[in-house]
Length: 61
Image (cartoon, rainbow, N blue to C red):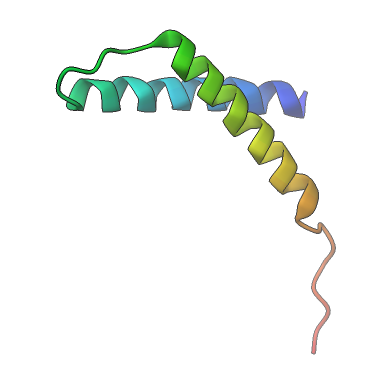
């Protein structure tokens, strides 16, 4: 379920970012395929980073 929600939110946010940037850039068009590929890449990167970061509490020094 964690992977689904990560993909869902990254899909929405990356498409929103793609739309806004394409609207602000002169001569650019919104491309659904580019946004979808970027969303999948962002999802994979988020999942990799969350597995690398330790989930253990920090010891007091």
